[in-house]
Length: 274
Image 1 (tube, rainbow, N blue to C red):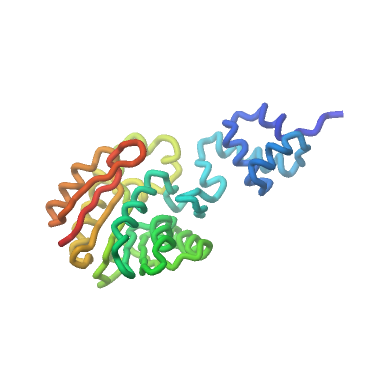
Image 2: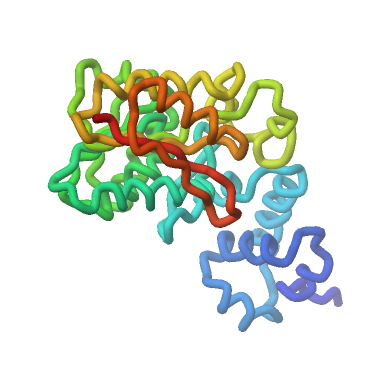
């Protein structure tokens, strides 16, 4: 009689790294990792094995784990993701942290997140500052559906608008803070053809030009929409900090700074409009 497969025997035969193997089985069985460890010799049913093999095949082909699982953790919360949105990354948590530091002395701040994607930035700010009026825009209808779902699931009060950058907001102005993680990879960057980036929406990764076009549009549009003393902070590429600071200086911003992520890279730049 053939012995029925167990998690332990399947792990030994799987080409996946152990962590990814466990993540897929947590997703399939809807159990925590500690359960998997305690039950690794239990027999696995044929339907569950079939589901695992299908998901494993997708991962071995290079599809991001976040798209396979349908979610990604960001600042300790689970955000729904899909192929229409950029996968939230740990370095973007810095943008939220910088935004919240800037808002520490503000009362009922008015905040705008441009190119919201999953809504992770806007929702995280709204949950941390329940007195804030947070609005967010995105040009992609699929991204806005996911952002709406995330705001609903996490009980965050965010208002979403459809459109390209500030065009989505018509004449809205008087923001205390504008934040954005725009497409900043140059169109000819080889990384667009590598790893997870191959699967993510190209329009969320690159502006189709030099990687500074979207950043420049956000800076120039901010000066008409920030109240005096309002701030703009943006995520950018590892080698773009000096250029972004120059854009901010030319637009009339003061107290310009670049902040480093946990890897020591200047990842977020911004300033105050006086």
